[in-house]
Length: 107
View (tube, rainbow, N blue to C red):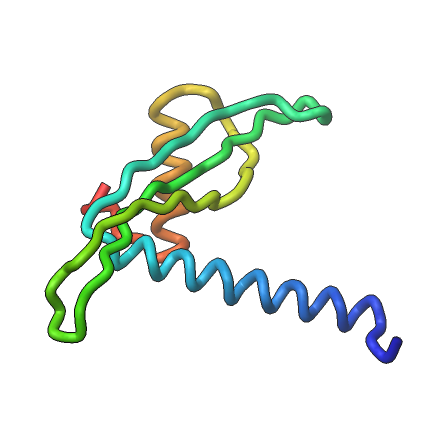
């Protein structure tokens, strides 16, 4: 009742940024992660690149010893695919990961 549409949008955007940062932090601490990507054409006839990262989640004791390893999939989003070639898509994913400060040495 007391929140305007602008304030609601700002709150939603802030929560989205916080969630994305949390998920990216989980990806960066993972010892390895594969990248799953696919392209599809949307209703607007624009090719969309979807990117999913599957990362290992390690549960540790207080002394640092691992006790369980699980997996988690994180959908990073849809992005306009500039071109369909493997090199161009790989360059686009690499640029996205650099922008999000995700180290590609664990891929």
